[in-house]
Amino acid sequence: MPQVTANQQELHYQLLGEGGEGDTPCVFAHGLLVDNLSSWYFGAAPVVATKRRALCYDLRGHGLSAHAPEGYDVATCAADLVALLDALELEVVDLAGQSYGALIALRVALEHPERVRRLILCEAPLPPSRLEEMAGVLRADPAELLAMLPDSLREAFTSGKRRAVKAAQRLERLLTQTTLVSDLQAEGDHSDEVLASVQQPTLLLYGEASSCRGVGDRLEQAIPDARLVTLDGGHYLAAERAAEVGRHIQEFLDG
Amino acid sequence: MTTLTTISNLIHEVIGEDWDLEEEITLDTTFSEDLELESIEFVSLAEKMQAAFGEDVDFVSWLSEKELDEVIDLKVGDVVEFIDACRK
Image (tube, rainbow over all chains, first blue to last red; front, side, top):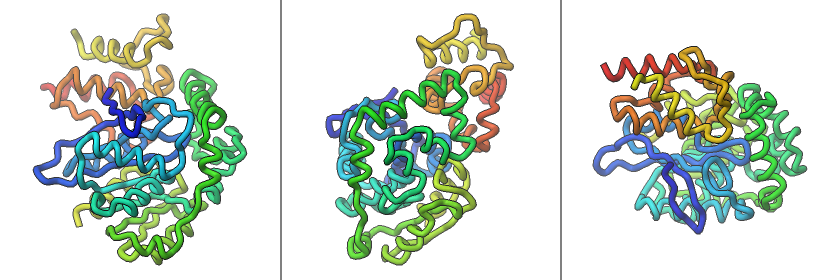
């Protein structure tokens, strides 16, 4: 299992594809709590990896990365990502993020414009605390959070068998034994002025049925070189519409 | 060692201490329903299979062509068939 120490965290990652000489790798950041790198790894990443290297990683405290009691604010998670790029000697990358992962990618693009060629924001919720799907999180209520999941994802937490028990334990730990909930509550919005300073060509992917669908319109207006694509789906788009998301990202990176 | 035996051993490694010794892995065993494999464990299994069977077996690309419900319904036999076809 490939792991690297980045920003004093043990982070698990998976690198797919060979890439050619001089290719720009695409790095994928997943969403909070119920997500880990597998939604990209078994979704869009292998599609993208047919032409370039695709790097998926587990956020701190998620998937097979080490448990972390704190540091779930976007700034710290963005510092983790930059440290991961440094550790793997990836100088310039394309960045793709789903939900909270999109906020992390956006932050890295704003703070380190020289290191990010293109940006893909899938279901970026701004501010994250307003996202209906997060309402259960802010009340630290796992049941409410799970009720908002699409059927295909919810089953993994609620069957009562081995897998569901493990997933529920992990969710419980993140909600009750870390600062994740308060970090998320404290997370602010970006002003339109800040969004106007995004230099990268940006692809915005949103689900028609998602509660943060309107954020897509706002970002398309505010980010100078942004294109919005809406897909038939909800907030958990990278997992729900994996193949389509992969195709859109591939076309965007090729263009 | 047959492909099935190799995959069974790798599944044992991934599931580790949770392993139920009563349960024997056959071609009809499903990853989701029978083995209760988590998606992140599937990532570990894919990595181990890649290492065991070599670069000719691009398990992740194969999976990426499937819809989510097809992946959920996958049987060990589907993977054995795929790997054996790659190695012919």
